[in-house]
Amino acid sequence: MKVYALVGKSGTGKSFQATYLCGELNIEYIVDDGLLIGGGTVLAGISAKRQQTKIGAVKTALFTEEMHRSAVLEKLEELAPESLLIIGTSDEMVGKIRLRLHLPEFERTIYIEEITTEEERKTAARQRNEQGQHVIPAPALQLKQQFSGYFMDPLRRFMGRTGKLADVSGGGLGRFSAGNGNSSAASAVERTVVRPTYSYLGEYKVSDKVIFDIVNYICWCSGVVSKTAKVSIYKTDSGIQISAGLIMKYSADVIAAVGRIQRRIAEETEMMTAFHVEAVNIEIKGLK
Image (tube, rainbow, N blue to C red; front, top):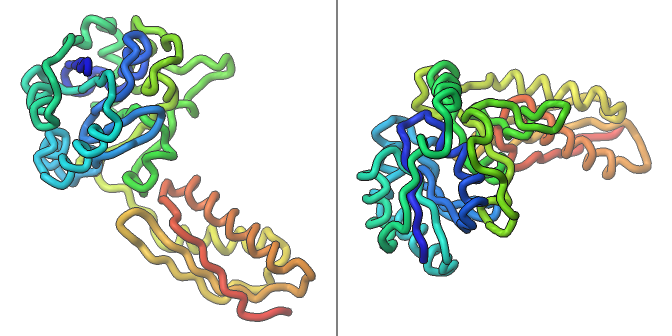
């Protein structure tokens, strides 16, 4: 196995540049902040960016918790990758991760200064320091459960009318192209912006009333709901579950109508609040 390291200070755009670097060097998988990522998928691990404190984040990134480390080790053994990139803030950090995951010596260490300009690193620093934004080299869909309720947006949403990626959260494309597409890690063009719990900007909270209003509005707009009898919200470790009792207008396709309402509630709630909606349960209380 060929193991590479990408080293740079916090907030210099390492995670943003990682996908392009993997494409250039045909690297299959990435280890970044406690996650094993490949083929546009989070394969194993826990993100350091979901921890409550910076100390907790560092411990997670270094795989100090045995269950976390074992899960990633097991996945690596199953995959038997030919190449892997470890991302870290120092030579010492990537070295510790390599040892914790029982990986061979580094084939090469790449420093962020080698693949980005000073202006690109300044742009990345502004995104981190002023807005508390962090980038994870994986699609938002893969991270929903880990980051439910956090500030989160896929970087593809920041694309302009020309289709070119805007210069956000990492300072552009750097000196690496997207590669030839053969790399599993490089195939994940989408990245995700998150705001960790330990961000100085504070917690992200949404009042239950906001979700009540979303549910009530969707039911009213459907044209087939006579009354919303009751709405309940249950919070879990990975998101929320919504239950609603509805009095429906008499219709031959009432079951199909309820199915459409369920999907709309889930989609709109996730879009407006960033919460991962695990389930939308609807009970038909009556027909009118």
